[in-house]
Length: 513
View 1 (cartoon, rainbow, N blue to C red):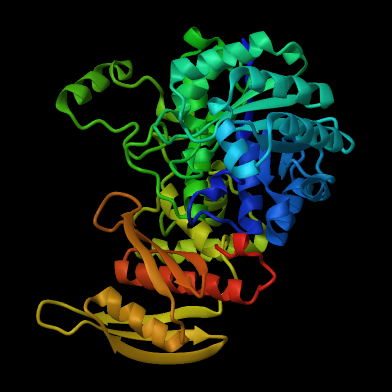
View 2 (view 1 turned 180 degrees about the vertical axis):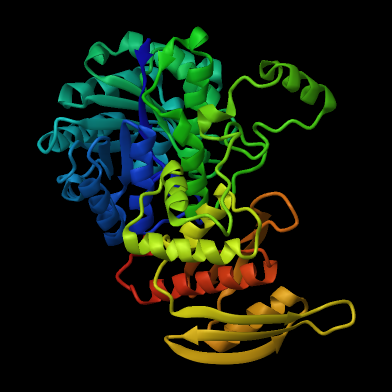
């Protein structure tokens, strides 16, 4: 079988999904998970965008040893210098430079003619080649470009030294048969195409990203540019899990394979959702909560008789398990550490001790601790910024005949503070009181509650998005008591805002957590 190169851009294009910005520590943790997943290349960011992104890409480049680490750069020497400065310590660095090729972009955005664009591409690729032999060139808005000009552009880029040329459906405009024909045309009419890998990068504006990508592969492309959970600009990018499982499940039809360890797909999906705060929709293919659920009686009967009647993939294949090590208040440290390892987390001793302590506190409240509960503990204790504010006590009074009231005790910069306040509901009262105590004036942009698992004793996971003075921060909290979970999420968001305030060197593109 032909092996497909999996180029993951969750940390770059995926981060462009509104509200999905990540700090350096979060990018590094995700990069480590992507390497465990088995991706061939990790696009770590756009170093020229901001000092924060430069530092994050450099941190990833210094840690990742197996996968290629890629930095994006416009077709300019300044961008390419920044990209190389960020990835030069990587074991396998790649510079990815791009320029638009469609007439609408040339006329309205670049104000350049075709010859000028080709010249700019040649100069950019040649300059990038002076730093590394691993150079990728992308023709932005390639699917809406003139076919013959696109072939001329790729021929020139390959001649200048590009080892990968990427054909993007930047705005998700193409139809699957049309895109497959375009890939085939490029292969047939670019004289030196055999000297480079042809890549495809599709967006999901019409819900066709995966279909277009698979069509491109069938027509001869051999690299896919994807993101975990399909996150990305506007409606998102091609979903890694959908393409990989498409190749895996229909290898009889496609005759293609990848290096991805499919058992790591679900843990990677959970981590991306946890870090970005973007909840995976229940009916999402492969990783959605309902992807392996059967409710209809006919379906249930068929699955009980033979799983293959209604399941084309085994849940174990993507990292879901039907058998779990049951964890509860009597579980020891060794069993807990073993479960963390199975979930893909290798924690330092201090971090392990802290998370285990929180696990024991939760186990005293619940009979059984599920994998999702453990991942929430990881998010709360490890993936967080320093605490300016910390919840010490919360009491809420509410009901049909009571005025919603919240009494809150906080630790603010090490000092104990206590106050009470009212609201139109218990959560409103809690947030009003906390805002008054912390002297913050953030605006609540989003509030959502999700039950982590089944049962009346399930933890509620709350996600909030706060905005203050142009800064936007995500806050997450979990607790069996949804009011407490809401308070934790709100305080977590306020702490992230404080982190941004204390780091004014972050450029506007990075001033979002």
